[in-house]
Image (cartoon, rainbow, N blue to C red; front, side):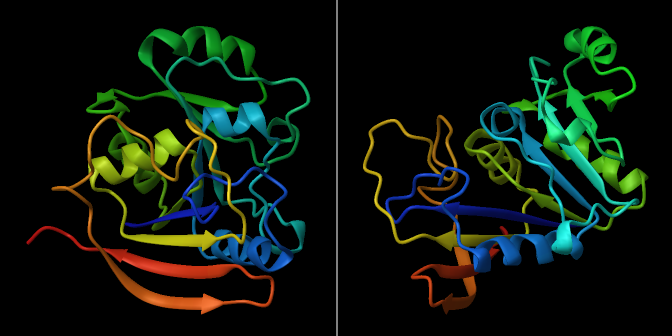
Length: 213
């Protein structure tokens, strides 16, 4: 299975709030969704935004899986477009949260439990669920903790990163990947596959993760 991590940051590495990306950046994301079998997103992104994970032309492919992962199961439901349109999303949560979440999301989503991994819920276990449903490629859409978990577990193959022409500088703002320890010794190494500056001032980067020999 191929796993792609996608994101956009300011030039100081802070995750960009929704709405700051250009139409070109949005198109890049939507086309990547079109070419992958599933998307998975962290719960905090759902709490702070109103994502639907649509493809180009506003499409929701009937066989494409849209998933949320939440250890606590404390997800907002009312007014969230993700739960209003078919296909029903898949929600991953912990064993101790599944019963309550199944009751809250009855008829709105499919809820599955995941075992604990080294950095929260096991992302590898979620990918195994996708594989069991015939998915061959997955798009990880953030946020900071989910990105860190994916990179720390070593499940990511490629990164699509948009550097936006903004500076945040705010101490403590979420970075592209946020965790307690370095991801490598001291860093996780990447191989640049392509670099494309575009007319909006954004820079589209495509990296491959350098796997350990």
